[in-house]
Length: 421
Image 1 (cartoon, rainbow, N blue to C red):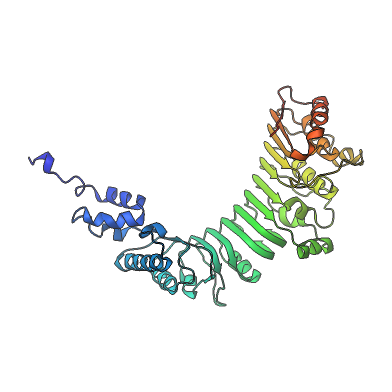
Image 2: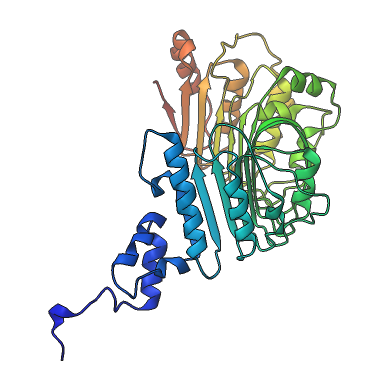
C-alpha cells in the first residue's frame, strides 16, 4: 500500500469530475490547469463551452496591447482545441471589426457550434460574416452591435431556439424571413431598433421581448406565446404614423395569444395598443394571464384607458396587476364623463384570483381613482392595494387618501397601503 501523503489526488480524479471542474472555471484559469500534472496538460482543450472576455489577458493602459493579447489568446485556444465546441461567447470592447473574428466564426462553423454570443462594445459596427449562416446546428444566437445581412440563399437556422439582437442593424424583411425560417424558435428578443415594421410568424415562440421604435408589429402566428415585455419609443414620425393608422393594433398584437401568462408594457405600449379602430368586444379571453404590468399609462386618453379595461376584464384569472401613470408630467384634474366606467365595464365582472394591485406615480385624476374603485369593488380575494402617488401632487395626497378609504371593498382582507417616498 502506497504512502497516502505521496498520492496525487488531483491527477487521479475521474475524467467526468475533471471536465466538470474545467467547465466551471474562467477560460484563462482553465488553460493554466495544464501545469497541475501530465494528466491535466491540455485537458482544457476538450471543453465544449468557451467564454472569452477582457479578463482573459493582463490589463494594460495600452488599448492596442490588450487587443493584440486577446486576439492571440483566443486564436491559440481555438488552434489547440480538439473536439466539438458547443458554445462560444465573446464579450469585449476591444475587438470591433477585428478581422480575426471572421476566422474564428469560420472555425466554429466547422465544429458543431450550438450557442454563439458576440457582445461587442462601442465603436465601428461589426459585420456578421457569411460563414455564420452555415452554422446549421445553432440553437442560440445573441448579437450585440452588429450588422446582420443574410445572403439570399440563406434558408434559416433549423435548430435555433433563442434569438437575441441588441443594437443590431438589419433590414425588416431580413429579420422577418429569419424568424419565419426558424421553426423551433422559442425565445425572441429585439432591442434598440428603428421604425420596425414586422410580421412575426413563429408557431413555437414562447417568450418575446421588444424594445425600440415600433411602427407596425403583427403577431401573425404565435399561439404558444406565454410571456412578453414590450417598450415602445415614440418619435414624431411614429406618432404621425399612429394618427393615420386605422387598423387595430390591439387585435394585431394581442388577438392571437390565448396562452399568455405574463404581459409587461413599458413607456408607450398602451398608446400603441390604443391605435386604430375600436375592436369592440374582444374575440379572446386570456384565461392564463396572471400578471399584467403597464407603465406610463395616460389616464387623460380614453383610448388608453380602454386598453387597460379590456386587458383586465378579459383576464379572469389575473393575480397581480401593476399600473403606473406618466411620471414626468403633471396631469390636470378636469371634468370627465361619469358614465364612462358604467358603460365600458361589465357589471358582472369579478377578479376571483386578484390578490395584489400596485398603482405607482398616481396623481389622483378621476379616471385613476375610478380604476382603483372598480378593482376594489370587484376583487373578492384582494390582499393589498398599494398606492404610490407621484411627487408633484403632494398637496392632493390627503384628499386622495380620504377618497380611497371611502371606496367599497369586495374583500374583507383588502389592505390599502399608501406609499409615500
